[in-house]
Length: 130
Image (cartoon, rainbow, N blue to C red):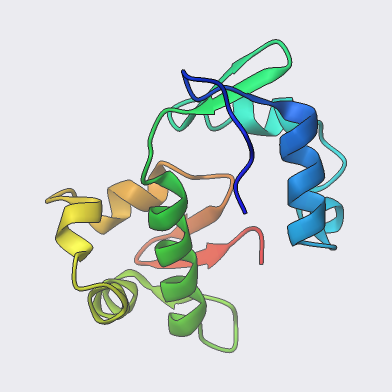
């Protein structure tokens, strides 16, 4: 189920918000009471927000973010921390196209791109949003 967008990929924020709440009943609890436009503006390297419209800049953002999140969850210890090396190993098992999604950039650099989602503590990472 996709959200209709215009020829340039723009979607109304209200439609996106409605769709997110349909897909995830706990959406507001998970992401807080912050306005969707404010939250997406914090992801300015992935989304462009203009007024009440938004579009994806990085078309592989969601796939890459889902892979990172799933690998982090699988690598988590009881204390909620996951070792970066173990996350990398799991990523390679989850997606044979790992290199094409992440390139040659160090995994730690990708995690640092999303400080509102992943908290780095030395060689360990925790999720800020489960």
